[in-house]
Amino acid sequence: MRKTSLFALLAISALSAGCSTLTAGGSTQPVTVLTYTPEGKDLNEVKCEMTNDEGSWMVVTPGSSTVHRSNKDLFVTCRTNGFDSGHANVVSKTKGNMFGNIIFGGGIGAIIDHNNGTAYEYPSTIKIFMGRTQRIEEQTQTVEPKNGNTQNN
Image 1 (tube, one colour):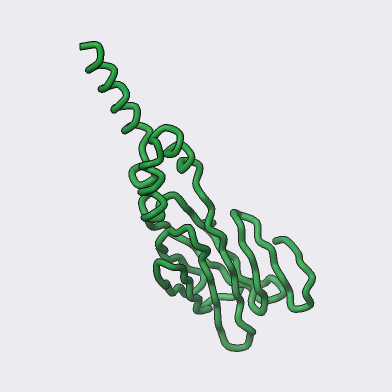
Image 2 (cartoon, helix red, strand yellow):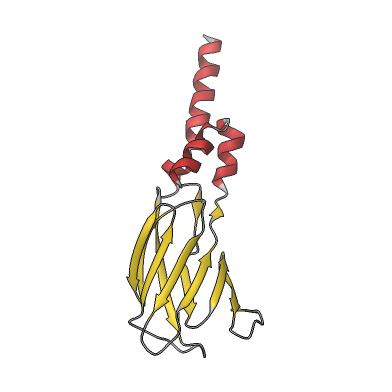
């Protein structure tokens, strides 16, 4: 009887630790894209394409789209008349509960979450400055203007 209780307690603990698939909103996430002129003024009605290894999504700014999570970066290209294209490399971040999967789940949950993308996330808002190339990590953005100097936004 004692072994059965211990086994049941361990099974409940493992299941309640949960993997990201069950606890973190699944394999997709909403992403909002905002666009700006090179001087930083709002620019609306810009067509943007977001791509990663899981697919491609279109959005007209300001707007949102649901993208498939991945351990690969999300590439964003925005185009409109009168401005050079804006580009961003949005870095995929490993979510904290991925490490809980490794510690408490023996790695099985981590493997599942890695394979379906639920262990990763992108920033919820992406700001694109036309005519610039950016690297976006979490909520900070590194902007590389045409003159090569780097600044944070």
